[in-house]
Amino acid sequence: MHIAWFVLVGVVLIAMAFSSHLVKRLPLSPALLYLGVGALIGPLGAGLLDLSPQDSMPWLELLTEVAVLITLFTVGMRLRVPFSWSAWAVPLRLATAGMVVTTASIALIGWLLLDLPWPALLLLGAILSPTDPVLASEVQIRHPDDRDGLRFSLTAEGGLNDGMAFPGVMLALGLMGLHEIGDLGWRWLAVDVVWAVSCGLLLGWLCGHAVGRSVHALRQSGHPLEAEEFLAFGVIALVYGAALLVHAYGFLAVFAAGAALAYSERSLRADKTPHQDGAHSSRLIHFSAQSEHLAEVAIVLVIGASLASVDWDWATVLFALLVMLVARPVSVLATVPLRLMAHPQRRLVAWFGIRGVGSVYYLAYAINHGIDGTVARTLTSAVMIAIFMSIVAHGITATPLMGRYMKLKRRRPSAERS
Image (cartoon, rainbow, N blue to C red):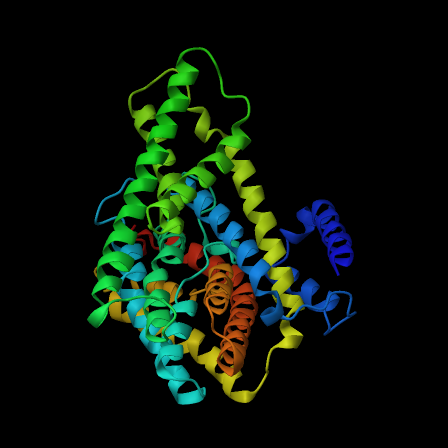
């Protein structure tokens, strides 16, 4: 299987390199095409790659972990909107209160349709609560200076909630006897919520800011940074490892590190320094984006190839539909008031709750922590089908809906409150 995997990935990557200009012209998300390729090479198609998610969870956790880390760092570097409560109000609400509402809504939908104990329902809600900032590229920030309020909110939310899903996952695992949460949940609240979240954000910010300043000092001394690509992976590995060492959330730390690097560039520009900070050159941003794209392709191919191994019963399919059509809109309407976002934007935010790589990681993480049997199979089917339907629905609608939104924005500038 490993030989077939290398050959297939090589063919797909070469085909991508030659056809990227054609893909950009299609009114579809690239992730939808990768999903189709994965299905064609899997048991549903040619049968060249046979993947069972439950049998592949150890390496799938590692693969998705790396993919999420690269994505979060890249997203953090793109977010160059200075922090203020007004500018960040929507993504912060969606990544905190919105996550709670989403988790509860998904658990309730699962209670109505799936035969799972309530701790497993809570786990399912937590696994599917994060959104993906990459899979529908049309709705994310297009370049570092993009100030569109809708794209910023969706991208920042995806960067934050990929780490903010951890408290819900850890609570559910604790209720299932697979993680220590303490009497009445005191340890979970103190360690898994307060400490892990705050320490992860602070550690990532301090490390990212320190690296950015160090690179600037190096360039000011006349020694330009020539291997900027190493810097991206170096910062990711250093920050993630340091966060895990102090029991903080590494995903949040890496996202904060990327944002801190972007902040250091802004501060240097504000000081009107003669040398641009090498950590934020177009070369590094381009390299990070390409790495992010490569990780996206690998994961979506795996999802497509594994679709034949999940249980496509009517209850699970209906569950996945309701997650997209009910849980996401409810969370947005409950946490984002009209004073923060106009009707056209809020409707699009309510629709674009894209599920993707982060949910695959949390699924693998939970199963590798001891969940097995019927519960593991039901969770796997529900998560994979929900991601599949999200990629298809959002991949088809992203381009026309965003095109309509941009036309409305040009005609009615007052509709944009960014």
